[in-house]
Length: 110
Length: 308
Image (cartoon, rainbow over all chains, first blue to last red; front, side, top):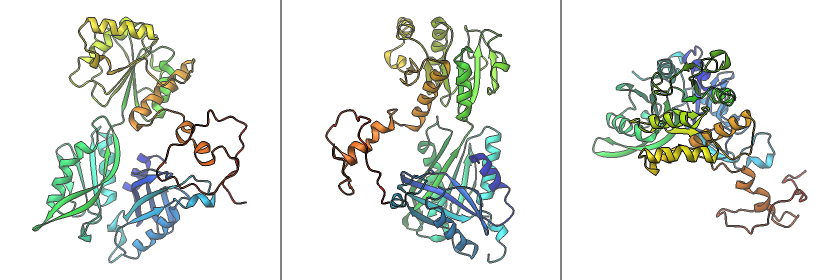
């Protein structure tokens, strides 16, 4: 999915979703600043912020936003990951901003 | 009303559809946490939304043109901005994006190199336009990836192709007199394309430059032309030459070195040295220069850094 398709998906969202955006990255990260992912209550809707490399942490943190947590920046440190010999090549640090993409669809106090 | 990410995404798509440039911003950190997640966009003289403080909106609006070079059509970065909050000066972290119409590659000369060049340029997401004075070459069916294929007159080659600083022009015409006509026009533009490349042998490039010098162009102006265009890959076929040209275009935007990564990183030389035994992790925070070990031969097996 290219960037334009992801923007179209974001613009057309109907279900409540959390938007995760890499707002800064240092070192060797699989995706660069500007990469986006949309996360629904049941998991990823579209896009990626790096596959196996730290994405799980972001998806985990996104769940709190469905419970009413405020938007925040998740710092994902991938510099230890190489020891796991993961298929994705990592080795950097990235800051991922997570927020409710469409707050109006979360309903009252959502 | 607070703008949501969804609303801003819709606005970005609208701007791209209309060929407009749009900047978007969202506060990702601030001492006043109510600002976090506030967003704003700016396109031309129109803006919408707020970052939660008029002073912060002003600071960001003033900074965006210098944060994103005019030749770029896409950008994403985070910056800290000072803003006024009552009597205090505070700092907020803002994430900014630029979305603009795709960069354009204008290929002058619709010969055998233009064909793979148009395809590869399109693969990079560029808008491709092909110009030639021969209708049988400047034929749309030869260039299925091009948005425009025009038959031109080399006496005024860009008459129907207005150009600006964000454009890329690649001259692959069939003769240096045609290249010359194009270069004179390009270099005399008030805002010439940032990337002007011209293919050719050293002899042909020299002949063109001699003509430019006679015409009174300075060496600084002559240096604006990337000629011969492309990276030194050693390829010969039209497709290989096209790879070398698009590789230089990528280098121009992405700012790499153009050297093979294996030579840039030298992982084996740096972390494994001469010895075939790995001596623990190397924490080379200072990237100290290492002794040259000569060309790395293929006969130096190294242990993979795993614990099986």
